[in-house]
Length: 308
Image (cartoon, rainbow, N blue to C red; front, side, top):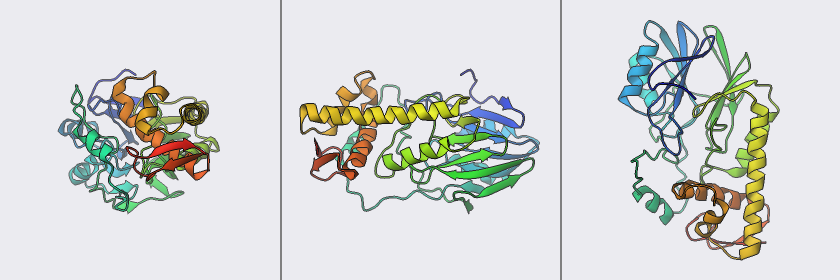
C-alpha cells in the first residue's frame, strides 16, 4: 500500500482517495477518505477531526463542488470531520444514523482500564470511541439510493462492527466497505454495539451481492472480495471453535484468562481489542446454548464462562 499522507491517489476513473495521518493498531496506516465523481463530488468517510486532513481534502476538491458527504458509521476515525467539511463546503451530511449510547448497559471496569492505558506510541483510541455529536442531515437506510452527477450509490446496511454501519455500492461494481470488510485485518466486534451474529449475517449478505471490488476505509482495495469475505467468515468460525475447545479443556475461565492462549500469535498490545471480539463470540455462543456463564454476561471483566 503505497501512498503519501495528504496526497490524492487516483484509484479509478472518477475515484480518488486521501489518507489521514492517524495510523494505529486499529486504523492500520490511517483512515482513507474517498472522493467520488468529478466536478460535483461525494466525499465518503471524511475521517478524524484533524486540521491537516481537512486542509488536504479541501485542496483535493479545489475548483469542484462537494454535493454529498457520506458516512459509514460513527467511530471517531470516520465521522467527526464531516461537520467541519460540511461547514466549509455547504454539502449536507448523508449516511448512518446517530450512535445508540446503550445507556442500559452496565459499567465494565475493563473500560476504565482501557481508557487509562497509555500506549508507547501515544496513538488515539478510536476503536470503540463513538462520535456522539454525529447528526446527519439525511439518515440513510438499507436499499436507499443516492444520485449524484455521474454516479449512483446504493445503501447496504451491514450491522455488526457497529449497529449503524453502512456500506455504499456503486452501479459499476464498487463497494465502499468502511470497517465492515477491511483490507488489512478483520474488524473488532465490541459489545454492546458490536454484535457477532449481526456481523456474520452481514458478511454473508455481501456474498450474495455482485460487487467486484471493495474500497475499505483502512487498507488497500480488495480485488477478490468474495474470497476475502469467505476467509473472514472461516476465520470467525475457527475462532469460535477455538473458544469452545479451550473452555472444554480448562473449564471455567474469564475472558482475560482466555485471550493470551487464543491470541498467542499476536502482540500483547492487541489483547484488549481481542478481548472485545472474544466477548462478542461468547455472547453469540451463549445465545445458541453452546456455553454457559456465571455472573453478568455483559461485563467481560467479571463473567466466568463454561462449556454448556
